[in-house]
View 1 (cartoon, protein in one colour):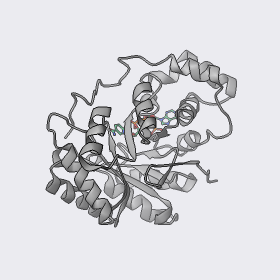
View 2 (cartoon, helix red, strand yellow):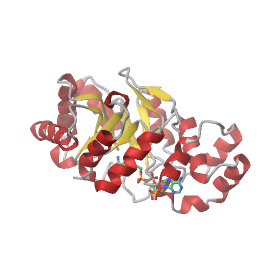
View 3 (cartoon, helix red, strand yellow):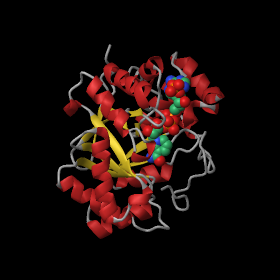
Length: 280
Ligand SMILES: NC(=O)c1ccc[n+]([C@@H]2O[C@H](COP(=O)([O-])OP(=O)(O)OC[C@H]3O[C@@H](n4cnc5c(N)ncnc54)[C@H](OP(=O)(O)O)[C@@H]3O)[C@@H](O)[C@H]2O)c1
């Protein structure tokens, strides 16, 4: 059984399925099998990163799958230690060699690292790599409006996507609004808040019971109705299927409001505020 996932169009005309597969910690043979199995059941968007050390695993999963390469949307991300223009170009090429691919469909700058202050150079490298055919759509991750504005001002190119921490405990209302006004698609990382305390949340459990769905399905449906692309990670075929089986029901306004009340100003999981936090 394969599920068809709706798509959302980006500001460069490219489109993404509204749910993709997160792959953090999926590595090696088991990881390649888990990703292949996700592709078999309908996932087409796969999220990876240079720093997850699993671009090779993703490439292997693609080769094991019978779905043609041109139907898959493969994402990777540039690490903070390679933001200078020359290093960024080499890292993009290395990312491709690791996966044995000739292009990525979406490539993101992983973190802005504002103290290092080289993200505009990194962005220029992504713009050029796109011109050379190495990347189809270019975006960023963990960028704040100030950082995005600067990219636009200094290069004239606004990212297609910003992948940010987003879950019911940290719903990023203002950042999402800013994205919408500036035609950037929001992609939610840790969309299930890593499926820990959220599974016991009484509000979400109540909504789940009413729809006869799981807590994860309610949360992923909520992302979809916010207009965000989510990338839940699961190694389990049952949970992978559960996470894309969210297109046969909807949350009403009252339920969306109940979900909105769960957010907290300090709701980030590990206090990773992109204005201060840096990752290399
Ligand atoms: N850009 C960034 O800075 C950044 C940061 C963090 C993450 N990411 C990306 O976002 C992806 C998703 O985030 P994440 O992996 O941190 O967290 P997540 O997707 O919110 O949660 C993953 C956890 O939830 C479990 N799970 C998945 N589906 C479930 C279900 N239906 N019921 C119960 N448990 C379920 C998984 O276990 P099982 O595998 O056992 O199902 C795993 O332990 C990552 O894999 C990565 O690709 C990006």
